[in-house]
Length: 327
Image (tube, rainbow, N blue to C red):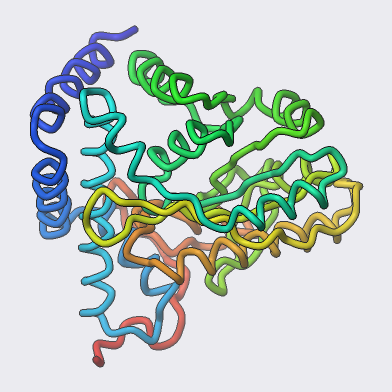
């Protein structure tokens, strides 16, 4: 491991200590203020978020989009504080403040599944990490497919708190066989499906009206295993530490052959519509910072984002009305 990675991990451990030692409410309030302050700093990642908001909500005023962005950053701050808090004496308290709703939809998904296995899809909403741990601790153990952190110390830290809650992590790139076996055993497999996917793994399906490179693996695995697909949201209630994990209705998945391109395309589109509905219901709790539309269907098509290095380049036109400032 490089010196830079050691310093990064040391800084992370140092920064988490104040939040672990503070009362929960104080820690969340401080972290939310830091997140909101970040919104005032500027920078290319904030520009990515503003472009995403213009794409998603072209009819909103700029002021309304800015309010949602500020609250989204405050929620990210609270989420990071909770990840520090669960590594200390407040762990049981935080996990106990997560409520599960819509269990009848989960049961229906299990009954409709050929194996009892359920492909759970979700987004970077609320505090998805804390809620996943709480659901696992309440008797719904999840096999979680995730993107590993580049820093091995950070990755090991995250693995410890996930596995300590009954979750089974599977790293992207090596996850397909393990996820398939879990579905065939009648288990739950969770994938967050709201970020840009590499072209070789992607199906392009609309997300807020714009084709977005979306991982095809969840649809492929569900089709092969005969598993149900269930959208789930994990939402913060108000601005405190109470959360609700809400199981939605199972999706209608077509066919059992992922090699059928038309059926695969239709299934990925169905999943994107479900995730878009979750984001629309709580846009202030979604992370808008990611370049969701970075990969385009045509490699020569310009994307909507400026270069991270400040290099000028042509950009994809935004939806009509997305730069309006009316209230």
